[in-house]
Length: 406
Image (cartoon, rainbow, N blue to C red; front, side):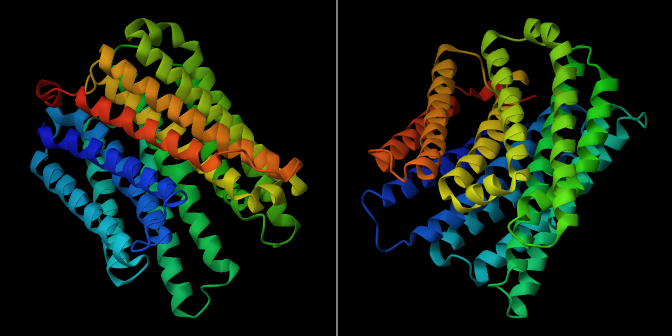
């Protein structure tokens, strides 16, 4: 596999972290020539479409590279995704939401369609027997395409002059819900199952399939959990409750399946990998459990109105679960070597993440109770983002050229 693929993946991860540091620095020493909102939009789009999307696709290419029938198409697709992601990030920094950033964001969506078809065709070549890993990956591709309806709806809503209406925010949350809880969650679980089975680790397919169907069917009503701040009647509240409980039960079944095979998983891999995987599954459980709190009306209002809680939740999902799961699978596929330096990098990254979450959720709790502010909050968040950046750079440094070819 071309060496540039793995370096591109970590380049985007580093760029996301660097823009995060830049955002935190804005609260300490503002840079007037670059608006904070422009950095925010660039950071969030690059995190999802640059790092997370490319990181997930890179795992797929690495796993299938030896049997990949259309290597040239995969290389072209990866390079196009890289180029568009960079141009999109630059355009957001330059103009925020504007002509060029919208063009590149839309182009990325069409590249996502191509990627979905590419992944689907490759997995179909591997055989027609329906197993749990295919259920997860095929459904993730469906939700990836479904989520794209959100951005197209945003364009239409803006065109008819309803950008300030709740429909605009509902379309945005539609996209985020099916990206986070649909595409990324299901795809990474599917890839994890593939990697485990390649190592002859026996998994409880029955539990995985039960968890899959409960989780996927709950994703549709679960969307309304994200928009409970809109008063659309008791039916929406019922669907939100049904969806949130269903997603939680589905996650429990999936985690139980992994727990039953944990002895085999931990014996196959180094202690570092076992610890990272345990943290990943813990973060998934915490994420799913905290979402249950949204079905309590008074609590949901507090959550939606507390910015630090919302940001903490987004970081818990994309950084705590998704990013660390991607890194764990990089270790499992031997893209990242288990060395003393990589252990230090992961420790710094996890400390930075935990400090970030502690400050964000702690500030939210203080606002709910005493209306006070954590002393040196901005300095603490800046430190947390710096630790994250340093950890990512150290992990990138541990990758040798030989490990990039599969």
